[in-house]
Image 1 (cartoon, rainbow, N blue to C red):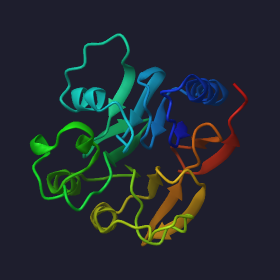
Image 2 (cartoon, helix red, strand yellow):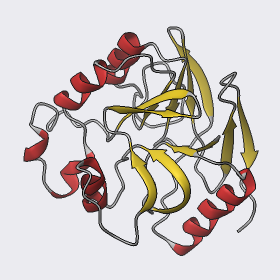
Image 3 (cartoon, one colour):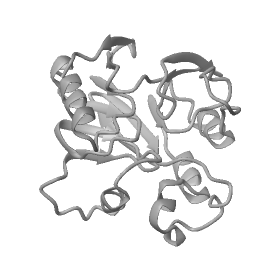
Length: 213
């Protein structure tokens, strides 16, 4: 199974790198941790919305009403779970903004649609038997290099409730590993640098250099 970090594939060069990773992995399915920004994909790709997306496409996927030749094989995880190669994979779409969190999702407009709200978190808590959880925000304790304190208490809460074996985190463009409770946490390098293979039987993750496009 292919695993990808942020792709930012709205530019030609980044899109070529994204497809180079798909070709190199030669996998049947993929997981992607947000900031995808291109949705016509070669294999079924289960992804979460990041803070940089085409939010019209993401909202259409959220509501199951996409009718576009530019969207193929893109499956949005939005406080939902899917069975992927025998694994129960779930995800929370979006990033955290304290000014937006208590709003109803229907009140979010424009780029504010990038955020998750309380109802998204509460709905995700009702999922069960989650093996792998995708998040665009990190739980506390992930030692990525940023100029601010990294860690979102709502991701902490979700990991406390769901207790997945593995949490895959986008957004930080840095390969870092840690643990949160009993959950192994992996911050993913961006797709133009690395791609990952996930063994669905053992949940072992290996990192590989993305070939030159």
